[in-house]
Length: 123
Image (cartoon, rainbow, N blue to C red; front, side):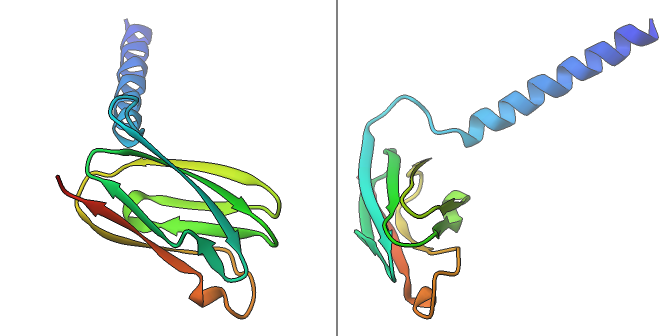
């Protein structure tokens, strides 16, 4: 009987974790806005990304010269981009507003200037 309770508790914990993860994962439905971006000393190109509320945004980021990072705090994104590599980050544009992003990996003297913004427009 005790083993059954432990197994049921474990199963419930797994189901709860899956539900939480599903909330943080971009939905496959809705329009996809794919944006290719480069990171290099000391800029993102483009440095302004414009999307609409409800869009599933896919940023495809390539570092051209050094290891960089992208931190988009509002979307819970903080990823490293190694020199010469490409990463993909995805999020749902849920609320209208302007959301700043920045390089999150020190890349030299101009690192603090390496910034951009995501502008989410309402309907």
